[in-house]
Image (tube, rainbow, N blue to C red; front, side, top):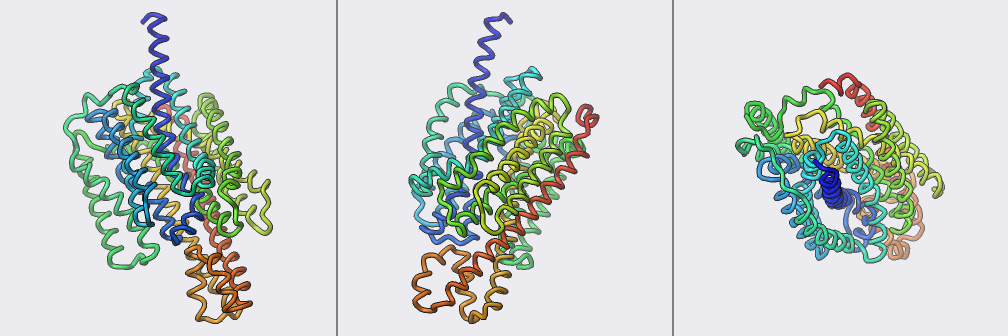
Length: 515
């Protein structure tokens, strides 16, 4: 290849990379962008905490459940085809969400958007693997990919805060619609088609069993929060998940062209990267969901102020991601991921401390920034280890498995920590109401008002009817919300710290280099 041809090829690859990272940015952005719309949703739709979790989780649940299927489908029939279809579905879901008249419609719209994201996101990593055959160029491209992924997650609350401040929660969906419409023709004209030439026959059984097993498992965990984990329908969902998961593993093991080669889980770097991705996203999303919820409901932060609060965290992620790529090149992934997880855990725990007593802006910003830096350091090596552990022809499988782990971590983080928050809030508030000798007949009403975010709207009416009871109840409610957030952040920090230990064991230099 001549120098001119080489320069032209590099320029073309860069254009493709920019379009791919734009798709990545948009799909990852929507994982966190709704976190600053929680108060606005409660005010306009009277949404309960449980419904808020569903609005956040509907996107990530569908994203996670279908990621593997679409990633492998792209390997079979063409990554560009699947990617373009996904962007189109994402646009349709955004339009549906912008016009949603109630909570149910909004949850459905988020699910449709998750379907589109599941189709278009896996191809971003797979195509990068194809257009950058040189190991050094590919490492730099993957570093940019991981940096953009981290940036999108951190920018979600920032951009979301600006949009909600300007036009309420529907503005988020109008933004998604406009961005998708701009990206679609660029992807159509720039992104090359690619596939696995040795893909073989489509794994129909895997396409059905995989999403059913994962979807029912996550759905059972979410539904079990409110219905109870011993409820018959919840137990039935768990049973379906176990049976279909077992059959899926058996089918994939025997298939000549599996959607997910279960034998790859014997590779410790690969399985370790998936576990660490799950744990870090499980824990970090406590900041985006619970901290934002606390700041809006208890402290009355505006969407604009929350956006300003998360800007340093976003910058920390960007800088740390760029630095992490160089660190990994010098020392391998083991130390960077472990250190990143410890820093992220420390940031989450310090955020908990920053919310105690009189909350001031600077300590909260510093703790969030520390969490962002740690998260940025950790995410780059996780992605590169997962991709480098598998053959190039299975890059779609590796990419899908990695992102599935992230999204499942996100879903369960919001579900489990959200459930823990609600449980702690209810128990603490009930105990405080008894201590304050507030009549029992008011307990259920007060708890309901707190969980649905309507206490501020009914405060004046309640003040007129019940006098001094209201002031005591409001103070107790705020204490209860803090108790729930604090417990959840503590659990989240411990989970992230534990993932750092797993990373240290799994990413030992010899294992990563030889497996």
